[in-house]
Each structure stands twice: as C-alpha cells, then as structure tokens.
Image (cartoon, rainbow, N blue to C red; front, side, top):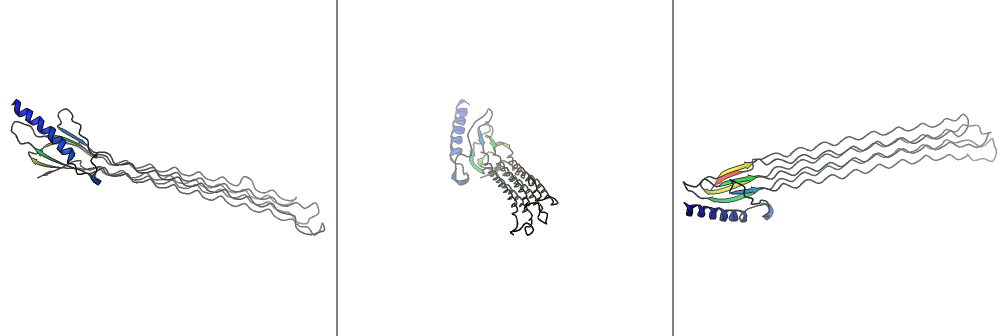
Length: 270
C-alpha cells in the first residue's frame, strides 16, 4: 500500500507538470491556466479573465456662437439724411459631439487539457478543479460634449437726436444642444475548458465561467446657455432684441449587454 501511494503521488506530480506543459491555449500562450493544488484536489486549473473593453472617447464640446455686430451710423452728411440701422443677430452655439461607444470585453480564453487517469480499484479518480475565466467587462461609453453658448446680440446704432428711424437691437443666439453619451460595450463570453482524458473518468469540479458585465453608458452633455443678453435698442422708440433660448441636455448612453456564461469544462474520452 505504501509503495502504491508513493507511486500515485509521483504520478500526479508528473501528470500536473505534463498537463501544464501540454496546454493548447489561444495564440500559443501557456499562461492561461495555473497549477494551484488545494486540499482534496489533485490539479487546479484557473482560466484568466478576458481583457476589459476600452472606454469610449468623450464627445467634443460645442463652439459658442459669435456675437452680433454693433450697428454703424448710416451714411450722409446732413442730420436729416442720417438713418439708424439694426444691430446684428448673434449665431447659435453648436451642438456638443456624441460620446464614443465603449469597446466589447474580450472572451475568456478557451483551454484544452490532456490527462491520463490512472485506473486502480484502490485509488480514487483524479480530482480536477477547473475554474474558468470570466469574460471581460465592456468599456464605459464616453460622455457627450457640452453644447456651445449662444452669442450676444449686437446693439443698434445711435446717430444723434434728429434721425428719423428707430434702431432695434440684435437677438441673442441660442445655446447648442448637449451631445449624447456613448453606449457601454458588451461584456465578453466566459471561457470554456475541454479535458481530454484516457482511462478512468476523472472527478471534475467545475465552476461556471461568467460573462463579463456590460459597460456603463456615458453621461449626457450639458445644454448650452442662451445668448447672455440681447442687443440694446439704438435710439428711443427702437426695440430691444430677443434673448436666445437654451439648448437641450443630451441623452444618457445605454448600458452594454452582459456576456453569456458557458459551462467551464467538457470531458472527452480518448
């Protein structure tokens, strides 16, 4: 019995080394599993999680509108020939850009293990714990850009006390709309594991590979402010310009979909 137990421990040690060295992992990588024995477990393989998706870029802020031009006195040499002109209207602020969408989380790696299980009536089957890697979390959506502010209306002219017209001030510009937040990226799928074995069926303790969480949606961009003030009237009797209106707030991005879970181990008898 002592010799049989020693032989079995030596076999498991060799099997652990042989199995780690014989992993067929994506892209030829050999670091997708680790060998960390636990009590009651002969070989413990844990898949690494998939990489998280990149966050989306924030949207660009809108450009503020230009101020309206102040009016000039009209041409003419005499007081009677002079005439008043209206101030120019300000332009509206531009809309903020939309935030970029977050990237999709990477799938957990798919791992293939090869093992030969010793057949013996006195020895229990080889205990293998497979903890598969989760999928990567989706990236967060970028925030929407703020809307530009509206420009100030230009003032009407004032050409003296004897001109016949009344000049109106220009209107203030409208604020730009805030950009929409980007959508969060979808989570990656959980990893899977295939265990090819020969001999007695191993006792496999498997954890389910969880999918990665979806990325959060980006914040909305703020609304642009209305033009700070309308243009003043140029002369008595002229009208003051109208103030611009504020822009609207952008929409919040959608949260990404979680990745799907997959069974973490599949037994294949060779």
